[in-house]
Length: 256
Image (tube, rainbow, N blue to C red; front, side, top):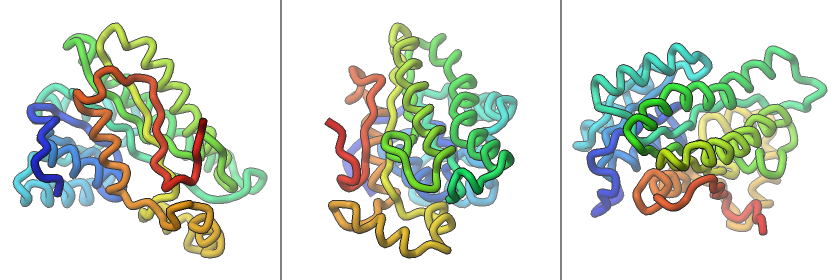
């Protein structure tokens, strides 16, 4: 629990992929800082559980069904959030999926799923919230990319491409929307201990061990390690920051 911080009081945040892992940690942090949070996920039971847990802690949250691969689903979800919680002030694009395999062994079906969730999902959700933000004259968009999108990652060619695409897309969007006082920024996790990572690595423990050895802090990230950076970009503390990319990776990548 983050005590004594209320930078987001009165704000409404929509967090995608918030049923578990990094998304849940982000939603929790934003709620702790005063936001009313829409727990948006295709996993309805998981979203409901996260929302219930936040409510039991005295925080404001609502579970929302959202399939980020569908623009219609994104538009509908935003309409529900606005009806139930209020206009969306903060969008956090967190939903993601991957399958670890060499590119030459991958299939077009896998590419399509990775692209649909990791990249097109960001496009869909941005498309759904931006008109409202423009009409109101402000907003915050924070997208979760990955250090894989900055430096590449073995066995994650298409995923890395999508995450790199999020960075370039966000920088361009930041330029286009600055006049509307809409800030667009990116947080890049390094390897983080989530159900997704465990699923990807369960058959390759030596890869995971090598990954940890390459991290100067000698540990995997925890979902909570990412939440503070997102909360900063979502707050007024970052009003003059846009088009920026920050890595939260225990020092795994260091760009000059």
